[in-house]
Length: 105
Image (cartoon, rainbow, N blue to C red; front, side, top):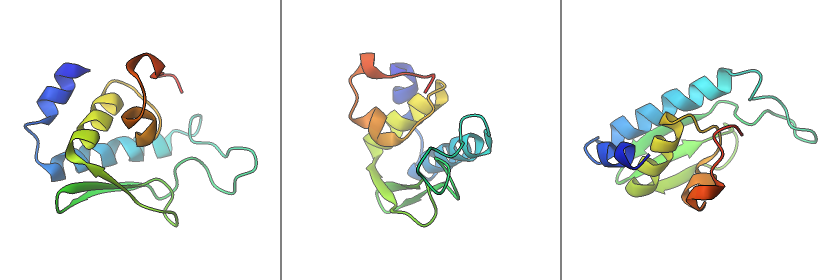
């Protein structure tokens, strides 16, 4: 994953956001992974998107919910995890220790 992070340093912020957006769309379309959780009205992702503005990447997982703001380094880290098969939200990657990562979530 570290080589993916180094490769991400060469990408423009808009490219990072666009690649994250592709992953979010793929995960949202995955009916097996993106199913409703007991007690919640919607699935894990609904109307999700990622975009760049200023010096940040913004991510929305559920369209009527809060949009998260990621610094460039955190966006690259999240993109690298998604590229390697991770299924989940950014805070699980940004705040996790390497051994806590699970690509099968």
